[in-house]
Image (cartoon, rainbow, N blue to C red; front, side):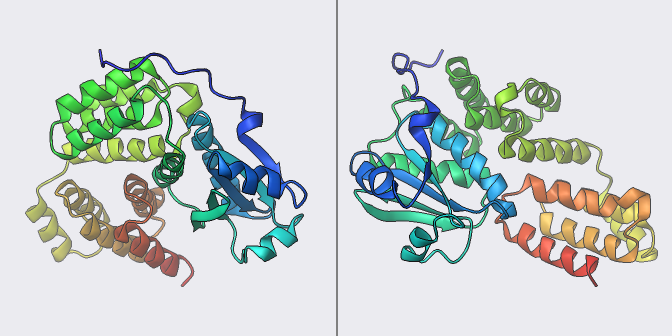
Length: 306
């Protein structure tokens, strides 16, 4: 069992951590409060689609920080004065305040991993989260996994989950460790047993896609034979789909996406839209800001609306 500090104190009530901001309370709840604890301000509007995803993800990350950071939600439609003073031109926009000044931020929807990293970075300005060393343990395990020590990483992630069963980072890491060990059955069992409170987390959706691609890779056909089949008959859609699977299994996600885009261009409805479905699986498995994802989504949109 991982040696961690004693159990942390009970987390503050969410009402103390997350508030609705107004022009009347902004000075007190953001500027003054940030003198002692970092405050994240989420500028949003009811009609903003990305805000509906970003807001709850931010709230979850702030709640998980157990009081190391607070959050104020500002509806720009109802508080145009604040938005004007801070020159908010795009929503969602997120600013972090520390010691009365904006010190970090971002615009637009971002992946869950980036949200967690942002909140952790902001929390660190005020001293960080007192979590008994769990955050450090997760980071250390992620480094082990990146270095190829999947078994050691799995043991560390599992130890963190004994202390905090709903730790998203540790849960994702444990699944990825078993994927790296080619233990797909165990990876799937872990995913299916995710606690309800994190079962819909974007990070778990991503690792679901990684598992699906790993299953496909196990049955991927011979790359050279599939290339030859496509070269011989460009309309052999099944061969092209299998070629994309084999390319991805070989680590060439970009080439796999190009084959899937070509399949979509030739027959978007073939096999109940298999090309588009597979493209989304590949996109979901990668970071949202990966060039393969950004370029692939742009090309797919061009084909859809051509």
